[in-house]
Length: 70
Image 1 (cartoon, rainbow, N blue to C red):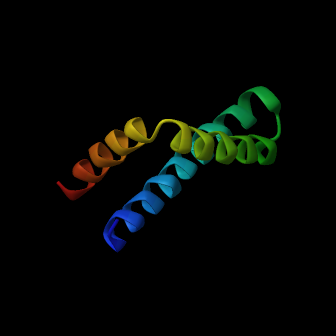
Image 2: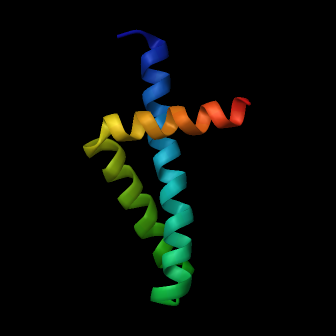
């Protein structure tokens, strides 16, 4: 594995964490009535999703990166 592949994987995990923060903040605000708990749950869920579903995370990361580069 090259250093580029390691960097990309790290970026994908951070990307999944950030998505988790967004969804967790929404969940925390609406359901839990506590944003902090929602954010923590979102980060954990995003990290686990990135590790369990790497192909899905890569696909979503590439789609978002492509949109941002337009």
